[in-house]
Length: 131
Image 1: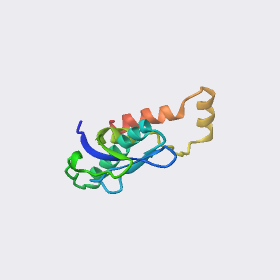
Image 2: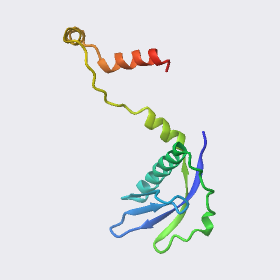
Image 3: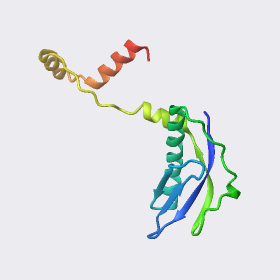
Image 4: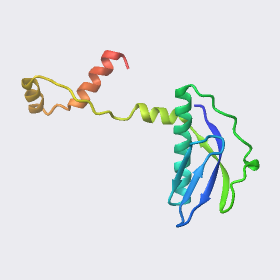
C-alpha cells in the first residue's frame, strides 16, 4: 500500500478550533474542533485528495521539507500520512441505494419468506460479474 507524507500547517483559530492546510496541495484543507480531531481530519483529507489526484491522472508533487514551511503565528507544521488506497477502498465499498422493479407476485412471495432483497441482489451481481 502506497503512502505519502506531506507537511500540514495546523492553525489555532479563535474559539479554540484548528484549521489545517497542506502547502504542497492547494485546495486540500480541513478543520477540527480539537487538535486530535484536526489531525484525524487531516489524514482523511490528505488521503481523499491524493486519491482524487490519482484517479484524475494528476502527478503527486514532491513533499516539501517540513522544516522549511513557515506556518505563521499560532500555528505549527507536522507531517501527515496520506493513504489513498484506504480512501479508494472505503469509497468503492460504500453502500449505494438502487431502485428496481419486480413483479408484485415475486415481491409478495419474497416478503412472506423474509428475504433480504439487498443481500440477494448483491450475491447475484457478484456471481454475474465475477467479483
